[in-house]
Image (cartoon, rainbow, N blue to C red; front, side, top):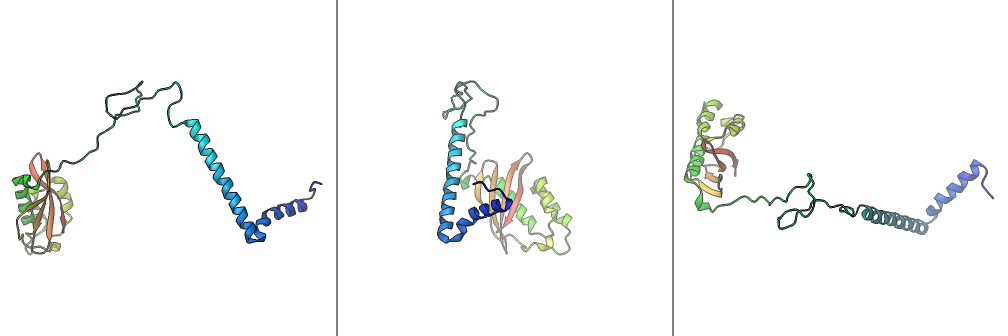
Length: 198
């Protein structure tokens, strides 16, 4: 017999959604059945979607594919494909191959960095660093107040810690901390492009 009144329908719907809440066992069974249904639908959808797309070109169509040996393409080229690019690995050199001019620039730069007698202005301090510093890094150093530099003298030689064909990382000890200075080869010679306090 069909339900003819809105009250009867509401009661029927209420009975359906309240059924799982009448006991913990019913609730557990309902959650399990619902989870199984959702998992099944997702799994079935993944298989149907994967089968439709296939993850590759359709039958009769060939896209460009580069082989692992880099010998070329195996079919009609398309403009969207690019050849594989070899991984970029920086060329490291032995520490004893650090260029002497780079080490000298790091030493002189560190000496100018710690040179901040009382009354020196930022412009005077920067003028001492300018010949040994890249233009880009000079802009960063312009924000440094020499009064805040804790070191007052260099206490040891400049020693390389990393060496590459166009850059050298150099450690320079001072009386309060150790500077790690990056010196790069520019058109105007070796220049400092960064430093860190260690």
